[in-house]
Image (cartoon, rainbow, N blue to C red; front, side, top):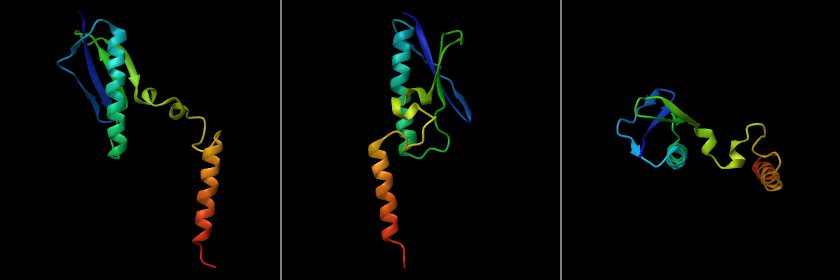
Length: 110
């Protein structure tokens, strides 16, 4: 069984995996990397990380890069889209935005 290494990249650099994991193939390595990346991204969000995960890089024993998975790619599909604002294209979001604006009006002094 091949051994895959999961290296984590952030703004500061790359944390290299020197242990690796034996997996049947690259497809299984990618699946394992996605699970790890989702956990790290969730922790980054919860902890308001200033140096969040940028990518997971899967390498072989020789250090050759096999796959690079950007952190953005492990997000749920609606969050991956950068071309839309958070409220664009969603009736629920539009309603929430309108409610926030109405709420802020209530607190203004006359």
